[in-house]
Structure formats: structure tokens, C-alpha cells
Image 1 (spheres, rainbow, N blue to C red):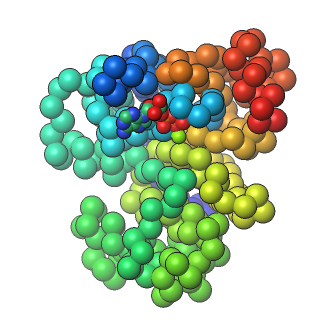
Image 2 (cartoon, rainbow, N blue to C red):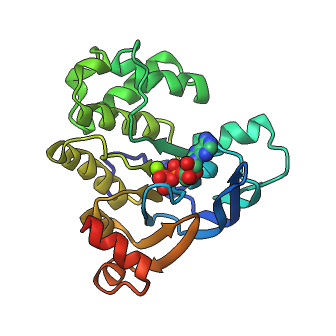
Length: 259
Ligand code: ADP
Ligand code: MG
């Protein structure tokens, strides 16, 4: 167990994520068609597939940034059923338990780096400013960014901004983390720093779903690989097996484009 990026208490509390018979349409466009994925506590599921296959929509449904039409989502012991009204308290709790990191960082531009990481802790967890900033500094130090604490995000490189976005999510003690192409907007050499933090997080036992085109990350860090196309799961299983010996033509086509 690596105590670096996650606290003992939430290391113990890492949750599984069960996505069961999830469907979602935008108007007539069926974007997710009966998707079921089971992510064991402390495991990493990599999600790949061509653009437009529904990967982002799936992640956004898991923490209810989008409303699914059908199916259920379970994080730990909390289950959300499509079609049933979600209480505000349940929504907040789910968002707290499931951290999300986007391709475009989404930091607050007018806050310092320190406030970016501290503010959500104060707002969502009710931590005091002092406690939240202390936690923020500890986490920033762990990813080598303590010296940026009092700067604005615009003064940080893309790779630094993405590491700040990751620690901002971690500061809320999530039980699972969703990553939507976290390195796609970064130069490859900068992406490596971000992938290193994600790898450390995986080693520490965080439950993760990672949408990525980084095949070496998916193979080395992923416990499970899910290949999506046109709202369906085309193939899933051991990442190394699928990359070496894809069973489906659509998987083969996608892999030959990215490998
Ligand atoms: P991916 O992340 O795999 O590229 P997305 O989940 O972003 O795929 O998109 C899947 C499909 O859903 C695409 O056809 C896209 O145009 C459509 N879509 C995504 N978001 C919206 C939205 N907010 N409104 C309407 N259509 C959307
Ligand atoms: Mg996407």
C-alpha cells in the first residue's frame, strides 16, 4: 500500500462500481445501448473505442452529469436507478464519492492553485479553510507542485494543471475515480507525468475507470479492458490478451489505428 496520494481511511473504503443495463439517448440517437460493466474495488478498467462511441457519455452517466434513461449505477453500497428521482443529498454524496478528471482540466481560473484544491473540500465536505488548505498543500507536495500553490492555474503547464485537477478530486477522499482522456490535450512528454500520477494512484488501490488512447497505460495498469463502438461493448477482457489477439473485427480496426 502506497500512502502517498490517498489516505488510509479511504484506501480501506474503496468502492466497486457496477454499471448495469445502462441506456441513454439524445433525441433519436441511442448513444449507450444496454451497457453493463463491473469494476471491482481497487481495480482499473480501461475504456477504449472510436470517437463518438459513447465513452464520455458513459462516464458522465456514472456520476450523473448526464441522466441515464435506463439501468442502475452502484458505487459501493449506493445505488442509483434510472427513472427514479435522485434526492439532492444522494447526488452530492455520489459526486463526492466518484471523482472525475476531464481532458480539459476544468480548473477555476480566478482561484490560486491552493484555492482550487481547498475550495471544494470546504464547500462539499465542510472542512475548515485551514484544514482544507493543509490537505491541499500535502497533496500538491506529493505531485511536486507545492511551489505553484500561490500561482494561478494559467501560470502552470498543461501537465501541471492536470495534476492539480487530479489532486483536487483526491482531496475529497473519493471512493472511485473517472478519467476522461486525461492526457489527450497534452504533449506526449507532459502526458507521461500525468500518467505517472495515475499509475501511483492505481498502485495505491484506487478504483478507476480510465478512457484513454494510451495503450501502454491500458495494458500495464489496466486490470480489465472494455472496447466500445456505437454505444455497445464490442469486446472486453484482459488488456494484454485483447491487444495481442483481438477477437472482434471492430476491435482490430480500432487497435490498428492507435497502436
Ligand atoms: P466518445 O466520448 O466515445 O467520443 P461521446 O459520449 O462524447 O463519445 O458521444 C457519443 C455520441 O453522443 C455522439 O454521437 C455524440 O454526438 C452524442 N452526444 C454526446 N453528448 C451529446 C449531447 N450533450 N447532446 C447530444 N448528443 C450528444
Ligand atoms: Mg469522449
